[in-house]
Structure formats: C-alpha cells, structure tokens
Length: 155
Image (cartoon, rainbow, N blue to C red; front, side, top):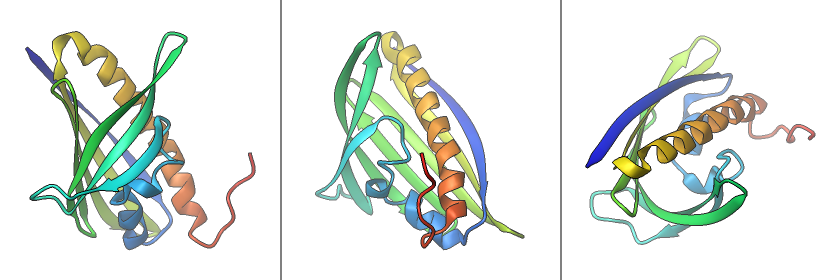
C-alpha cells in the first residue's frame, strides 16, 4: 500500500527570476544546496522529459550513512515553473513543483513537494525529504541574494 503527502515552502530572493529558474532547473548546480546530495550526473533523457539525471544522496539511519541513487527527470523548465519527478526503488516518487514570480525587489519561489512511498518506508522517506528540502530552502535564498558575481560567504 502506498502513502502520499505533501509539504510546501516559499523563498524570496533579490535576484532576477531567470537566475533562480536556471539554478532550480539544473540539479548539477544544487549539490552544495541540497543537504543530502553527494553526486549528480546527466544521463540519457527519458522520453517526455527535458533532462534526466542520476542523483546520489547520502542518507542516515542512526549512526550509519549509506548512498542511494535515484533518477530525476526535469519535465517542465520555464521562467515561471519547474517540475521535476524523482523515482527511487521501491515505488518511491518525489514530485517537485516550483513556481516563480516577480516581486518588486526580486523573486518569490513557491515550492510544493509531494512524496509517494510504500507505507513501511513512508515516515522515514517523508522526514528525510522535508528536512533536506527545508535545508535547501534556507541555503537557496542566501545563494540567490549573493548573486552570480559575489564571492561565497565565509564559513
């Protein structure tokens, strides 16, 4: 039996919408943002997708850390919307719908994450996804506020 639930968050940043969209549509640029990702590589694009990737996360179970690789497909990558779907065995799917809007001083990024997983795995998978994406959200605003020419913040 599969379970499904969603969570959402909003990030506001002082940058052009196109800059935010370019970053969010390219998982290879998110390795430093996403707390779990350790590797991203481009793979053959799946039919119906704009781009496909093999992404390796490092998950924790108590004191143990273990790598998990899954496939992520970018389905929509426009200036105002990005949709990605990640699939991992067994029957786990994470759908990310990001909407971008122009604000007077930058961009508003509204993200909805929907996770579907087998009931025995759901609690762990949902907690990991929510924690990772909220960590990404905290880093995203700071990165976009710095702008492409600014040096990284110390520490």
